[in-house]
Each structure stands twice: as C-alpha cells, then as structure tokens.
Image (cartoon, rainbow, N blue to C red; front, side, top):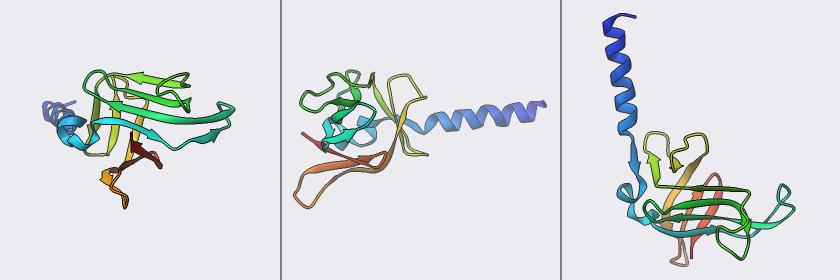
Length: 127
C-alpha cells in the first residue's frame, strides 16, 4: 500500500467517525421514555412491548419486555449512551455496533399532538 492509499484510508475512517453524534445533541426530541404498542411475539410466547429510554449515559433499550413493566424481563437489553450515525440513520446504544436500530422517522408530533418515532418499522410513543 502506498502512502497515498494509507492517507486516503485514514481520512475515510476519520470522516466516517465524524458522522456519529450523541443523539441528544443531534436532536433533543429523542430524549425521554419511549415504548411500542403491545404486540404478540412468537419468540417470547406472550404479548410484549419494546422500550427505549434516552437519558444520557443512563439510557437503555429493551426488546420483547414485559408489557406492563418498562425494561423488565426483556429478551434483549442494552444500556449506555445513545448515538446516531447521521450518514446511515442508525442508533447505537452503548458501545456495541453489532445491535443497532434503524431510524425510519425521527421524533415527531402525530395528529393527536403526541410524540412518536419509528425505529425498525415499529412506532414508539413517548410515555
């Protein structure tokens, strides 16, 4: 590899890293407690919902959790600061880049003036 190629590779990684931002600084509307509607999950064998709490470094994501208890008995649970990759629109919770969530629609006010956002084709509402 020539020095020129190494230079290009370095700057490619540097520019890609610039696209990752704290979601709370990127768009403060993400802050808060979010949950999906209750739905049946064959994997859990029960009615469940997903939860997302965005509150600085104390944030968390629970997938297939107890429908009446936020972040309780979840099949998947992640904690840590939430970041967004602005170039591809994916959320990263904590340090793991292997389990990300696609932002289909950033937080918005629906027709009933309630906050909603869409992640991985699921509607999350603030509660």
